[in-house]
Image (cartoon, rainbow, N blue to C red; front, side, top):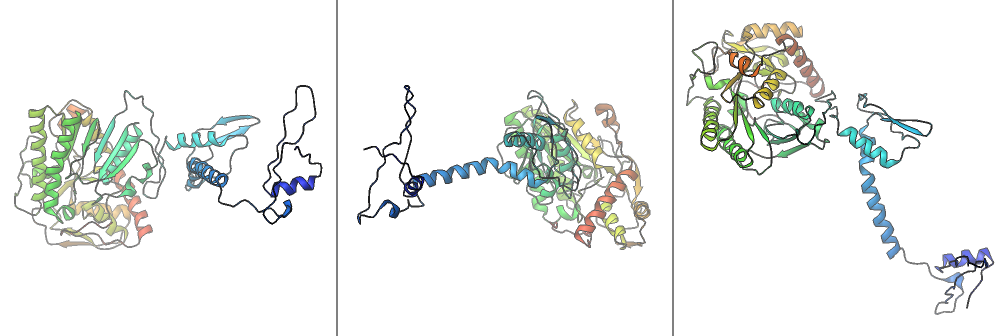
Length: 481
């Protein structure tokens, strides 16, 4: 029987009781719409419809709604996260037309979170994702914004950087990302730190793999920058056996990977292969003067063996290799407790503590700013020269002279304290860079004074954030996180 409902209260009454009501479609003859059949069942006690039981909350319909809500929330999550990250609103509306603005610098890492009227949420999500894919996010360690280029697939390379979360490695990652390549960082975080690369974590072309190079890994890459190994004497002497393994087994693993996928591999070797040199300045043809059983030998000899393996793989298996012999390098993101000359002198001077010089201070060093080193590594990797190349700044200072220089730049009241000399500490170190000039067209561009100004500013900020820093001495010590 067809029940016609004329009383609105009765309609609401039936809706609460779970009674379904539908209207039939209007007939082609123009007849009036009527109500559909209604199951007007009473309960067992004979109660009226006003006493019908409510449908249980956990029903099929509610489960479907819940699942749909979770799915929608998952899809909107990137948009919500972007809003809380705090990027500048990259849209403006004029009437009914929405125009896209160029990415703007962040102001203290925050922006207004209001949405733009008239712009669909999906468009905002897409645009902000594209925005995040075009630059780095400023962080405390790296407060600047770096823009990434957009390369066609035919020119974009997938590049592996071992030790990429370290001091030099993270700066190399910056250059590769800005060039538009896909970068995979492999680091066990012994001396490296996530904060050195956290400004790229969001980027779709960046990956960080926490892994030790002494263990094999299977990846598909076009180039390998093999930088993994502690470079500070206190750090590499902390576990000398592990240091040797990193230089030997780690290099074998990277060479094996390069052989399998036909990638070019660059070894970050060191001026330490020259030991305590008797030739000055040191050309690549100098064979060195290394103590094979001294406290520094785990690093010096490890790198010498690594170079040997590079050329053995080249000659026997046709692996494309590059070898960079890196001289003293400084800049932002240096480990505050690495115990090296530049970091120790700056930290001590900024805190007006005694500047410690080991020995009489007459030993010499040559210092290059990190951006110059990165440019040299990049030029070597992408050039045609495959023999070892010195990458360093020929400007030479005595350690004592350098301590006085940093005191002056920091306007410090520190005193210089002379302590006993360190075993096997080289008496002189200066690169002959004629090969780099001839084969790579490379030479340092940043003056030591300019580089020190940037590094001093960096360490001043670190001290403000962390409080007092006690520099590491010359003895073996585990890196402080």
